Image (cartoon, rainbow, N blue to C red; front, top):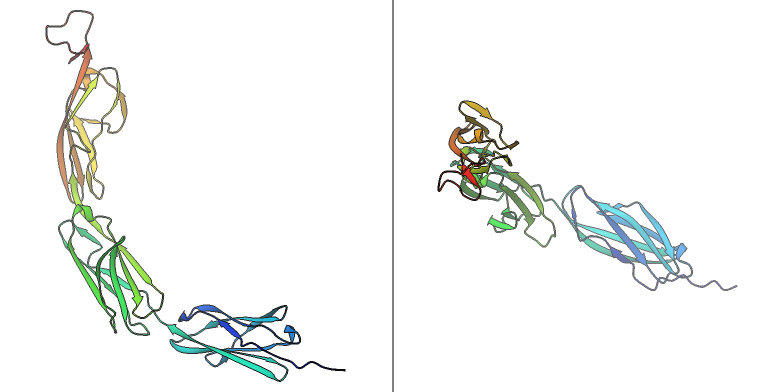
Length: 296
């Protein structure tokens, strides 16, 4: 009886990430083809950083594959090694893996809630990384406000502004990337709240309304401000409902006194309502009739 000699004609092929973050896991695969006489006789030893890994083995035809996970608690360059044995024949392969530490960047705003016209400083910094050298960018949406070249230690960048109304809700993002070829990025975001008193203008509170008697209309008067102002409108000393639809009568004509208030101030505005009245079935005075209606 002739027993064929065991053989491993091909080198094992290792597959894993070239870069792994401290404390995370990544799959590691060792594959060997051409196992003779049968793939099921292949014996694997998979190790990382000198420690054996747990793994499972699958076969398909003359190919055997060991699948495990690599994880490292400390940064540095470490070796993943796979040794495959069939009978007296062994073959090994290795791959270098860089385990890195990239902490979450820190984003600081001098006053995340600030009064309008106040000076605000936004600071983006990174705790020490390994390997050292971090590229920082302070961004707003897709726009880079300020960036730094890769630097060791704890690099930082700053952006200063005078807070305006338009800056309310403005979001800043601190972005950190390793200075090397490691394809990683960490981000931290913060939103700026700008507090300011009421602002009343024609876009929110028109100074004049012209309504036709009998139609459905809504008296509207809005004010900008942060926090949102309370708006009160009075006519002849009587509060008026704002934002509520009503049927127009000639008694609605007149001047409305509106006042907006919040914790940072107040603003006032007079609004005039003119009502075009339907003329009764008598001839109106000459020149008073226009388009079938007359102003009351």
